Image (cartoon, rainbow, N blue to C red; front, side, top):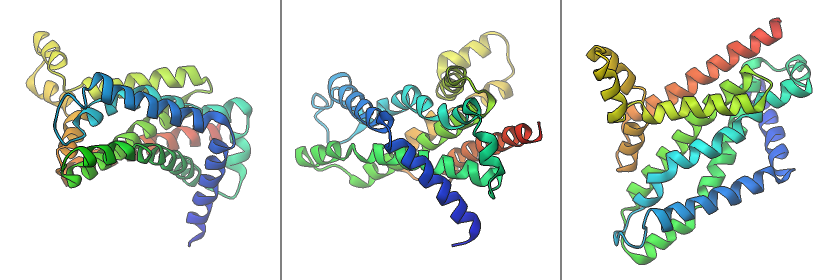
Length: 249
């Protein structure tokens, strides 16, 4: 393992220990599983659908992530700035991108673990019918990529301010835009104001929903994967620019 990867993994382990060394991780896991079960079985009508699929679960996933991931991400850098430990972290023998990658990796692994704990729903649908587990697997891949995109955006907003509430609000607003960008009422709003087609199509192209829904249907298209990776890469790159500006300042 190269020295850079060792530094990234060291920071990731530090962050993971921070999660599970406090009630934060367990409260988040219980809250996510509880809400996922409620929306899947009570609101989504899982049993009433009478179909061997997890459509009722994946349908609500973007909205669950919208309200649950920003609270996880808002502390990544805001807490470091508030406590004044960001200077200590950046004076360690690690580069800014290694610190960013380590923090992001730890949080993404935590979210992946939380998502994986919904496996009883998969067992339930397999017990009740004969689902296409390949489609379910693709849905989970889409969920993990979507979580990574939201998390990277939250990481970026967290680096902007030491106020966690401000970071939370900014992250929710940006992620909500990515959900609603391709929604017909939004595009119709722009059309109604006489916006040119290229602008309407440009705004709709930012929507995460077509890419997530494509993966949810069991189609792993490189364009969908590239979209999510681009959002993650751009957000983390912007985080690096912000962090380096703090170091320079």
